[in-house]
Length: 246
Length: 246
Image (cartoon, each protein chain N blue to C red):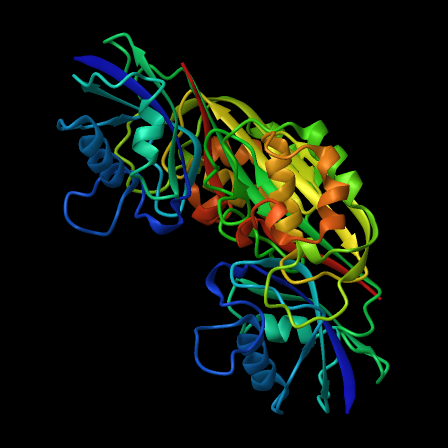
C-alpha cells in the first residue's frame, strides 16, 4: 500500500459539493472521483480531502490522499484518471507521499480566492465563476476593511450558524483586495477557515464597497462576535479553493 | 420605426449556431434573441447579423440590427432584454442608428480570436472556450507562418467546401499569434472571412507549431488554392467573434 496525494481542479457548478453524501442528494466531486479512481486502480478508494467545498464552489488546488496498492506510475496516473473523469474535474498531479501525510491534518495553510465581477452586465464567459455586483464599489474602502480583518482572531462573527467547531480562533495571514479591470478578487490565506468564513468576509467587503459598512466598524464587528452585524454570505460560485500548503 | 443596433456577447456551447434554422434543429442564438426581443418590444422582430457563427462558436462583439417602433429608451433596452434572456446571451449595448445601417453590409472589418490551450491538461475553467493541444508547439514558427498569411489574397485554400461564394479574395489585415502562459491566441482581422477561414488558418498554424507544416510552405499553399494542402479545421469552441468595425 502506498499513500497517494492528488492535486485537483474542478468546476463545482454541477456538483452538490465536494463531500460524498450519506444519502443520494445528487453527484458530488468525491463520489465521482472515488468511483473513477476505483475503475483505474481496480481497488476500493476512499479519499481524505484538504477541505470540503460547498455546492457550486470551485477549486484550482484541492488536495486529497488515499491508500492504494496500485502499480500505475505516478506520472501516468493523472492522464489515466482524467481519461474517465468528466471534463469539469481534472487531476493535475499525483505523487507518493509518506504514510503519515493527511490532506487535511498535514495542511499548514490554505488560500481561497473570491472573485467579484463589478460591471453593468456579467460576462457570459465567467458567469459561473464570479459574483456579479453591478453597483459601483469603493475598492480603497474594501482594502482598508480587508486589512482590518488580518490577524489571529476569534472569527465567530464570520462563521455560519450550526458549525460543530468549538474553537473559532484562526490566523488570517492575508486578506487582500486586487482589482484587474471589472474583476475584483479577495485573496484569503489562513491556517484554517471556519464554515462559510471566506464567503462572509467577501460579502462583508462588498457591503463595505457599497458604503453600507464602514471599514472602521470591522474591529468592533470581530470583537462583538455576532454574525448578524456582518454583511451577506456571498454566493458560492465566486469562491475557489486555490492552494493548500504543506 | 427606428433602426436599432445591438452588440451581443454569447457562449455558443449550448446553441446550434447563430442563425435561425429553417426547420427545428435545436436552439439558435438568433431564435432565442428574436423571441426575447419580441417579448420586450411587443412587436415582431427579425434581426440582421454581422456574421453567422457556427454551433459551439462564441462571440464577445457580435452585432445585429432590427427595425422596431418600440419606445423603450436605448439605455434601458439592454437591461430589459437581459432580464429575460438566458445567462449565456447578453446584450451589451443598444443604440439607434441611421436607417441605412446594416449589421453585415455596413461592416468595414471584423476581428476573430482563436484560442489554444497548450498544456498537459485543459483547465476546467476555460474548457468550453479553447482548443486543447497537449503537445509542445513551436510558437516562433507559428508566428512566421501567420505573418505569411497576411495580405489581400485568394483564400480558396482556407475555405471549407460547399461555400456558395464566388469571390475568394479577402484582405487579411492582421494574423497575429500571442502567448500568455499556456494560452496561445490567434488574432485575425479582415474585411471579410470565408466559411471556416479562421478555423482552417488556426488548424494550419497548430500543424506548423507541431512541425508538420513548415512556415515557408504557406505562400505556396495559398497559391495552390487547394484545401487539402492546409491543416485541420480547428474545433469550434476555440473561436470567438471579437469585434466588428463600422
